[in-house]
Length: 495
Image 1 (cartoon, rainbow, N blue to C red):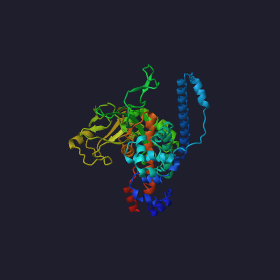
Image 2: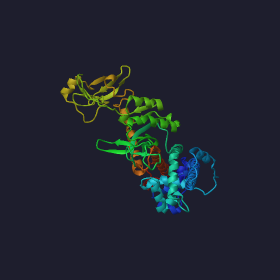
Image 3: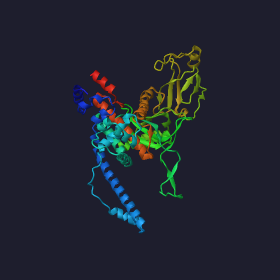
Image 4: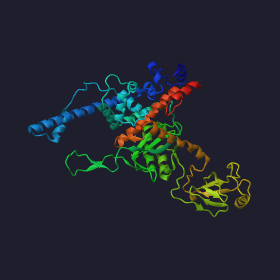
């Protein structure tokens, strides 16, 4: 990054990054170099301290378990009486050890490795991260590893602690709030909700025992994965996987929060937990939200009320006909009212919504051929049908339709209005977010089982996207979700 660029961003209120060290300049086009060296990873210091506490507790528990196993094996070999479970618990509570000892592996290199490995287009898991560190000296150095590299067991333990204690979730919230403070994100009046699926490394319906008995027994069984389900994309395509509901800003187009559901969960039922999670995580953003944009599957009176109760906002979703059929009309000049609630004239044209009469509870439709405010280029109306429909009126036909005639239309925000179309155009941004998370941030498949593992998997992908967006914003002034060297070059050329 040029010095002039840094000074310009400093004047604009951005936190300037130090220049990339000279020895790294030749590797600027490698995806992980810029975020590894320039992102302020110190914002995760609170996560680091919490991680070390859980690490100490887990290591202590392992020592206690090993001590008990060794003691029981010795006593069994000597024919001595084994302690009862109560006595074992009492003995466990008295075992202590100082926190001094061999220093654990540093937190920050581990975290950078798990996050930045996603940029190498490998399926993210402890094994693949470990192999990248061991086999790619450039990646290991960029992440901050020095001296003897950690063993695979250390990587697996790191992943387990971060997952089981919800530390990836806390890290995701930290980076979102950090980007908000830095101006990478803004508080928006419109959010976008949508669902996707994450393929699972599991067999649907498979059970396992947790009793530990090697011989056959009648102990109860539990599912190998408590969150897996059948995700049906069509009559011919289905997956064994998990369902993930995402919420992003309509303009910022960066994911803010997520909710993990069972694979077979209906999309419409995911809205409530997703909005509640957003409110609990980012309560200061709720006040600015006026609209929640979503697909037609979400459109229902229940979800409308849910959005209003949780966020005080309006759910903006297209009409879901839900099995309704086109209805013939006996009104002069009108052929039918289709299942979306739009009248069709005898010339075969869809009439345009002009407005609503809230006092009379009626929609007002007008002619798309002759009305100058609703006229559509290319539409014509034969003269004899024009006479039959509206007696040759200069501005064409005006038709009133009672709200009760088309209950599928939302009277508070009619889906046939141009205002709705303008606002709803921003919804497609979340589809690009999902595609980028899957193809660029290794979200497509999760290899560990259970809801916690899936939540951690999604949190890591979202966190990595926010890291890249911040780096792009600091380098170019634009928060790109997928930062690239070519964008930086174009920005410098424009300067």
